[in-house]
Amino acid sequence: MIEAVFQDHLTFLAAAIAVTLTAGLIIFFLASRRTTRRRAALYGLWAAPGTGPVTLTSWSGSGVLTYQCAVNTDLAAVLTSTQGQLNCVLFIPYGMFAALATRPRSLPLPPARCSL
Image 1 (tube, helix red, strand yellow):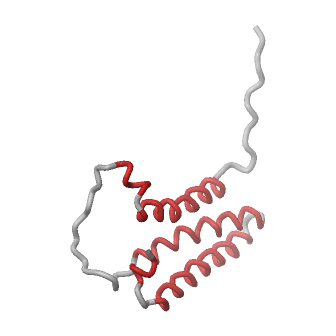
Image 2: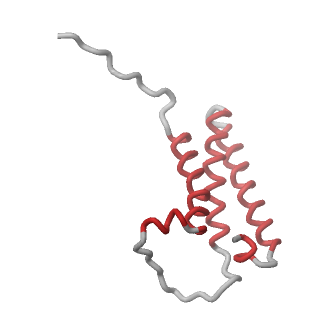
């Protein structure tokens, strides 16, 4: 799929990966000044998957821009097609690291059982 989209433009792909890693490192170093290194690592890991799709979807050299939106009504095709699976692989880390980075420092314990 990557070869079909980017064809022989591997320099753009390498630059997108470099921008993604750089964004994650910058956020890590900025956050490590204000919070623990573990939490800063989660912020960096949250920024990297957020930057990756932005840089990769900004690529316009592989096709014609038609300004038309395609809506697929078959819900099963979303997860069974190659594009749907790649979208899951692309956005699941973003959601996971967002949940880990924004969770409270200590999760509250469940309430004690009351006997009446």
